[in-house]
Image 1: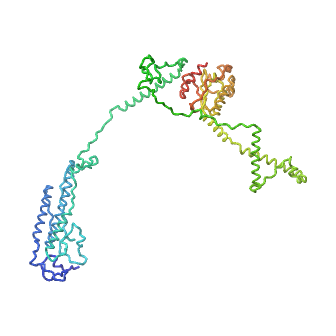
Image 2: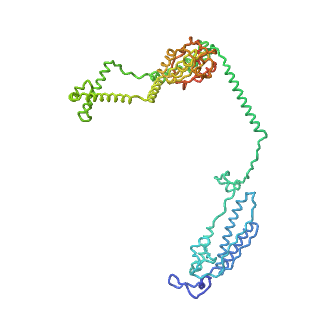
Image 3: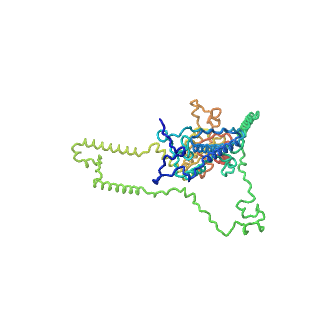
Length: 580
């Protein structure tokens, strides 16, 4: 497509063929007027070349080499060539500042070598004649070019600017635009290491090696010495053998079970030189020379006796918590019958009132053989056999309904157990009592069974100590359960009875100690005529010392005391032995 003829004003050529029309409807003055001086274009071109050469020289001095300057293509117009050189100079200066900032950041690094920076070769715009206006080859409007490319066209030529009648206005416009371009240049240089360290918010622990300037210390290898783990294994084996030896020695000492003398158990410690309640009243550590003045702390300043009265905190007496509920007043048989009669009459009157009001249907007559003729007179005379059969059926129906009502009110097996357990809990809540019994011989299995099964049924806690010489039974529970168990142990069980074990008859003799069998070594029954049960101690305690009921076989006194030590009742064994 053939392009249009270029406008003569694009190349700044002097022509007087046609004058442009002004806005004031008067002919514009000629562009080559002698009264107005034209700007010196050659001088501006020389200054731009000088600035570009200066920038290139600074770059070559910094990087130690001279870069080939970019070749400038001939421009069809001197104004376009000067604008192109100015743009190249600005780009070169910006690249120089970026390279300087990069060099300063990489200066502290000692592990890298600086490589020479190759100067950037600017891509030159296409050379050619100015394209004609209009058509598909029209250039981008100068208002859309941006701040950096102001004054330069799309193809590298000078952009078309609005021209004024005087060159002074054009000169002013170029001066303002160049100053604006210089002020809007970006500062791409980053902070150096000194500026970073002077920053109050700088943290060296968060920076890398380039920022901190420290090299990474390599961690040395640490090897275990030879035989280290073998020595540890030998030490563990020796420790295990030592613990096993201690256990064997303790087991042997426990099996020996040497009886301690009863006298040692009752040794009373010597009284102290001064009792603790007298330490604040006696000036000294003993009661010697109490009559001497200054020995007593009564009238002194540091005496605990003052004119003030100390009122202790009032505590509720503990016996009030265990007080039983007040019982209702006792009534005689006549009084009870009178109350029952009055209650039934009141219920009957209420039922009659409901029947009269129609709230309830009238009940059928209660026919019996005694009132048969009075209730069913005419029917009884007509057919006495049928009336008698009817009365018998009604009597049987009433009896069946009565039995069914009783069965419905009767508690089930689970409900009876729950009711009994609730009563036992209420009994224990009133207070925990304890009894200690001593039995000479418990070789008869029936006696051991009676002691065990009754304790479980009464929900008491305690322990039975079985010993070759004597047996100790400790029982804890409520008042009702303890009274029942006391009667069982002291009166109901016949301690002089003895019989052969059931396992002997069936051939299933259990493996047990000889002193727990009802027969001796010859197979004869042991004589239990002197066997008896005595009450060693009885009293109350704050809470249960034993959690459950059980028994334990102890062949020595030491084992028996160890079994009672857990519940702090080892003194009961000593007390029972002293009652022999």
